[in-house]
Image (cartoon, rainbow, N blue to C red; front, side, top):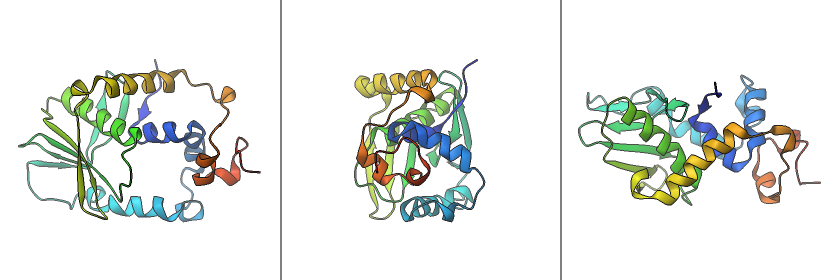
Length: 186
């Protein structure tokens, strides 16, 4: 049986697979000891979802656990409007739409579909500037769907001991860099 992948790890793996190891290692430590402002602000952006105070409408699912058996991915959705079939992933501030953002919402899409919901539209929402970005559902963007499928295979086949970081800029932005033996920062 393949290991279950957490939705949040999709973006982390693309950024740097080693960050998942440190995320697990740091586990329950006080996050302010190692997180930077943008991670802390991102958590704050999800507060209404986590506390289920975003909406009181019975048509709005918020912060529910979802699982896609097809891909072996588990996590939470932000907001799903059942009546309109609109799935929304909220981010504190979107300056660029990264594949990791799209793949997180793809995992949510597949899980909701397996649960019997009809997802008609996928979008990302940037809270800081109140901008919404429509994302094609996977079947309408085969290139991204294929990249998503490849990412899942890569995650299942990943060998920690063989990984070498090649992108210094990722190390510069990594909250775990001071502890990492693979950092490119001297």
